[in-house]
Each structure stands twice: as structure tokens, then as C-alpha cells.
Image (tube, rainbow, N blue to C red; front, side):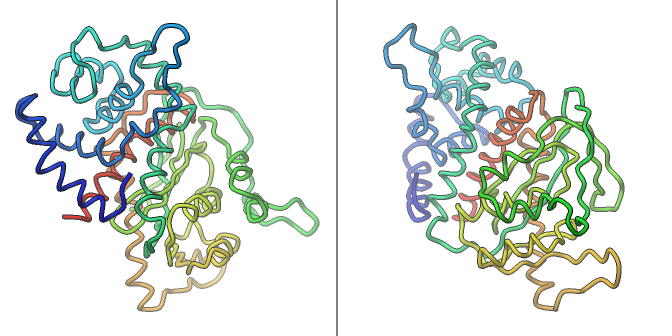
Length: 355
């Protein structure tokens, strides 16, 4: 991994040395090939392969690095299925060799791809690569704003039956709400408490139209420049506000920022408290519920416009990097599938800052 100045040197090296060398060996690279090379060079997945290194017991496994790069390629090209990915690798020599397989016979079977993906998902490999990338680039810098949003993820499995989670404030003497408990707990406990089964979700879109879906929900924090920083996947039915405190805890460990921007779904006392505790200014649209709506001051209105960053990342994920092609089942694999797409977006957006 490299610092932001190092990222500039890396980009210059890719342009002046790596691309010409690859084209001498493989022929002309199209825009997607170049995008794939840039993402892999920026994310450096090879630095996260020690866990999968063969130690001499049994048959040597297929290259986990090549398989990891292949799943990055799946997100770059937005291949709908792993079978489509394998077909592309088999019939496109340039893509195959960029992944790390010299000949078609070197490409493993579909079942090997599936097993490798399951391992990557369980190990949270794409999430770890992205966390390292963001921490390296922003660990000692200030990112002005975090924008937060949740988006529907359509699943391909049967919805679980469960009772809805209450979100109302407790009566005197009642059990504390999830938000109240989250304020008192560390991140790992808060993450463990979130529901992750496939179920039914309902949410209003930007035009106020009710949207219902079966599947999951992606909760996302993005910083200025449309760079995804932290995310998590929950049941579709979980209200956006219930993921805000764990997201805030995750993002605080990766970037230093000044403002937390969110829409009225996040208008809760506890969410404002976590922002204050972390030393941030919370600009959260007021949910009137009962009474008049509080408006932002003129300067806050201008700053609040940055909140669309998370929405743009979600849209980019859906339109270009796998958000509409979730064919795996279970929250762990769904999170890994989406994370490969968000990893691609993070790398692309970081390099756009240099242009």
C-alpha cells in the first residue's frame, strides 16, 4: 500500500512503465483491461495472501491470488455470475493472463471458484483489503465529511420469518432500545447484534415512492470524492438508524472527519450523541414526527449537499459493479460480493483525485 503521494508515483509508474510493458507482451489493452490493472495495482491483493499460502501439506491449492484477482475482474466487468466470469477468462487471453493463468488448462473448475469465494467471504478478504487501502490513504489526514445511506439489495433466497424489531422509545422501566445499547458497547458487540437473515424490507425512494424488496440492506459511509469507507450488510427490514452507530465506530477507526451527514431516517438522539462523542458535527436532516421541522442554517445547507456522496456510490455499485447481480446466498457471501464492487469503486475514486 502507498500514501497519497505514493499513489501519485504509483499512477505515474503504471502509465509510463506497466502499461507499455503489458502491451508489449499481451497486445493492446482496452479501457476495461486498464481499469482492472489499475485497481489491482492500487489495492495490492498480493499483500493479503499470506493466510492462503501453501505450507507443503497435501496438493498445492490453486492460486488464491489469481482467484482473488478474478473476483475483482468480475466486479470491474460487472459479470452477472461466476460462470460468466469463468467463460470470459477462458475465452479472453488478455484477461486470463492479467489474472495470473498462462493457459486455459490452468483455470480451475467452477467448484474451485465457488469454494475459494466462500473462503474469501468467511475471511472478509475484500473488506480487509479495502480497510487497509483506506487506512493507508487517510489514516493521518482529515476527510471533511462522511455521508451515510442505506440501499436495497435484492436477494435470491427465501425470506426468513421473524418478528419485527421495535424502534420506539422505551417506557419508563422498560428494556433499553438497540440504539441505547449500542452507545454503551464496542463495535464487535454491536455488529453481532444486527440481524442478517434475508427478509422483506420497505423504504421510500428519492421521489417518495414506497419500495418493497426481499433480500438485504447495504449500509454505507462514504467520504468526499465518493470514496466508500465503511459498510455492512443486514436484513432488509432493519431500519437505517439501527446501523448508524456501528458504521460510525467502523469509520472512526479508518478516517478522521469533521462532519457526519445523514437524512431524516437517522434523526435520533443517540446518533447525534455518537457524533459528538467522536468529536464530529452531526448534520442530520430533522424528522418532524410531532411538531415543526427544524431547518438548517444557510451555511449548513451548503455543507449538507455533500450528503449525496453516499447515494452516488450506491448508484455506481448498482449500475456498474455488481449491485444488481447478487446471485450468492447468505449475508456473509452477499457482503463479500458487494465488497469486491466497493473495493473497485474505492480504488477508482482514489485515483480520480489525482487527475
